[in-house]
Structures are given as structure tokens and as C-alpha cells.
Image 1: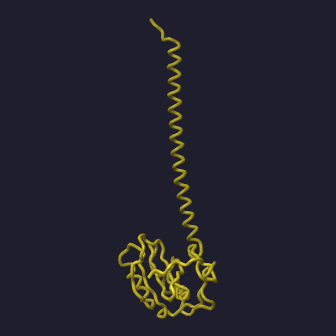
Image 2: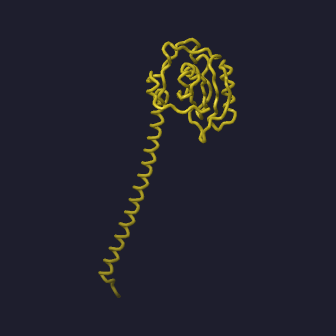
Image 3: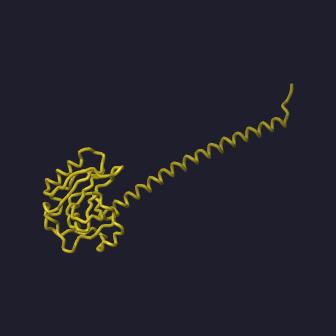
Length: 202
């Protein structure tokens, strides 16, 4: 009867222990990597949501806007010239908005697709320095639109439909004609404080 060499037995035991340690280490590192990936995904998601929520909670969704003229009142709708631009990939949405605004009495100036390669996220009311009261008057019909001034020289107001658009505000919930225009909190009284204005898109 032969007995195993004690040296061989010790070596086999050491190898077994090393393999076991290596396996435990590999599992621990893999688990840690998974935890780190999950934590990163959760963190980035939270940051993204926080950024979106922060933008939505700011006046005019964080976009600087001019204050309405002193003593400005909501204008009679037929005096306000409005053009509708469809900034979404939803065919027919622009036409529907144009009809809805026409039914509210606005002086409609046409319909076109907004020149952009990507869908506009949120509806924008675009106007120039000579159409501030007009821009505020139109904006009063929308619940989630951004007011954005550009460098146009006339009083035309563009309604650029975005993906979040659902419907116009109910007539009883919109500012009545002749009512003083309510300024957006934090608006700028000097147009120079808005910085460089976007170019007017014909």
C-alpha cells in the first residue's frame, strides 16, 4: 500500500486554495462591476430627469424673454397676424392648429413645415420686437409653449408646433381681449439683455 507524498498533497491543496480564491475574486469583481454599471445608469437617469424637471419649472422653460410693453393688453384676435409652422413629424397637425386658431379669430397668414431635421420638442411662439404684445396674446392660448423672440422686423407671430402639443387652452381659460397682459416672471425689460437673437426663419 502506498501513501501520497505529503509534498504533493500540500501542493494540490495550495492549488485548490488558489483556484478557489481566484474564483471568489472573479465573482466579487464581476458583481462590483454590475453594481457600478447599475449605479451609473440610475445616476445618469436621475440627472437627466432632474435637468428636464428643472427646465420645466423655470419661467418660460428657462428661455429669456422680453417683458410686455407697459400697460399692454391682450389684443383683439383679428388684428394679430399668425403663421403656423409644423415642427413635428405628424402630418396634418399644422393644418389642425391653423384651423383652431382661425376659429379663435386670428388673422392667419399661412402654413408651412418648420425647417429642421429633427422634431421640435416643445411648441414655440416666435415674434419680434414689433410684435411683443402679439406674441403674448397668442401665447395665452397655449399651456406649454416657449415664447422666443427672434430678429424679425414685422409683427408676424409664428406658432411652431412641437411634439408636446396636445390642444389649445379652453377659451374660458385664456386671457380675455382687453385684459392687461401678465408679464412672465423674470422677463427682461431691455431687449439687449436677451443677448444675440435667433435669425428669423422665412
